[in-house]
Length: 190
Image 1 (tube, rainbow, N blue to C red):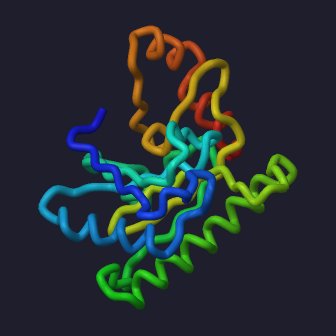
Image 2 (cartoon, rainbow, N blue to C red):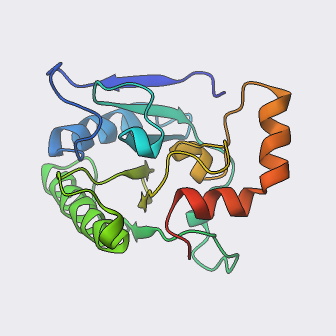
């Protein structure tokens, strides 16, 4: 797993991981991204158990940014096996209140697209299972249909290509089922 790994907790212990991100969550994420400017980071959110959340208390994770994530190259034509909703943040000042409000609006728009893509698979209780990855240049929201496929699971980092495994058996299972099959089954197939 990544080291160091930071956990951003809400100040209200009644907030739950099934809830969408709020403006205050994104403000905290932007603050941390700016404060760690010397070492590139990315922020992830596992929106509920279906999206790979392992804890019920609402939190975000801050991880060292891998050298390349698929949204980094706008001209990359490699197919991602699931639907995702991406916005580049060019021209948005994430250090200003106005920029952070704009990011919150963008997130809500992406979340609405994710909700629509889930269609009838969505429970009628307001919970929208989704993953979020945020860097200073872009934000991506990934709708989630399943917590696991053939015994294999992933959180946001896994959906972005950094799968967290605890054993050789888990690695063998990923290889057996196939990463594209797993990722398409966890999300909404592209």
